[in-house]
Image 1 (cartoon, rainbow, N blue to C red):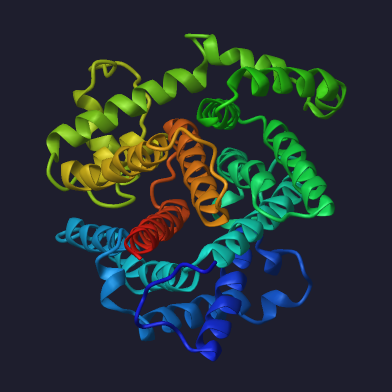
Image 2: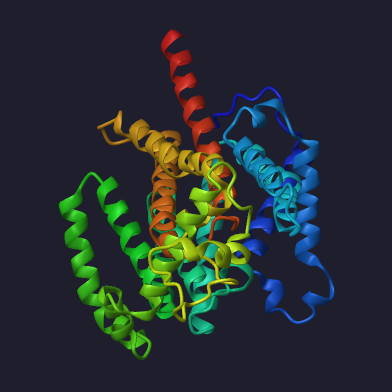
Length: 422
């Protein structure tokens, strides 16, 4: 049963065009085939696709979009622009312009297109395929992702950890075939191997956070724990075979208080905190910490006058939380807090209302998407604690899918009320 109550439904032609553009947009954004297929760089394929989806989203913009969580992407863009007022550096303006004119309209298009259970299932399946290819490319590249915001090993590991819930929960989608089931099992295994190959400590923690979240959200926790142990033992030989040289030493350094990387990050985090205290309302501007760190590190506890202190000018902060605090201030931090905490809590408590197993296909798809989103955010929040990823497309896309889930949830409940009254 299709559940969608929007009076401004799309025509078949508009929907088909929008769906094709949305599929291509997500595939080119994450997999980036233009980086690997000869000749594609001669023509701005991805740029054309992104622009067309933006135009499609703008022309089909409706009041319901502005009343949905998607509007947060627009609000962030405005905050970025306002935070850049008075700066010589134009990066905040460029980022704000991108959020307002591109990411907002693109997310609006995704929100408009994927408007019922069947289309939500197709979106989940698309993300499974996307992360399958991302994992293969990451393995082929020895730990580096497809490119752009996933080219670095840490960034690739975070993106893959966020993709893992799509592959895991898609196993429970209604009416999947045996071939689809085993493809998704294979995708889960390949994603896990790819994360390990990145040798990213933050990525490993994100993987663990994702798996623990999936386990916690399950009704049969003991059963899932036993399955996880059995799979780990069975796959241990394969996992050991793909571990990069020095992997154990690298992971063990996480607990070493004298590790150079750890010391540097602690000092950067304190510098970011001091930067925030000096600019508490709007921060120093998007992507400006690297230019301003040298101005504020002298006020930290580790800075010693007259000594050869490390100069962190030009360094990123290596933490999404301190990045947001120092660069967007209290105003931006409150917006991100809503996304990081309040939205996942809303998903969790809406699921917790129903203790009985869900049998209705629409409700099942909706609850699976809620679990996927919570798993996505767990990976992002844990891995992001060690990476500066605030302005990557992960959050705008997550907001768009969250908005899709909430609308679908409301429509299911409205339909139930109508049936009860009828």
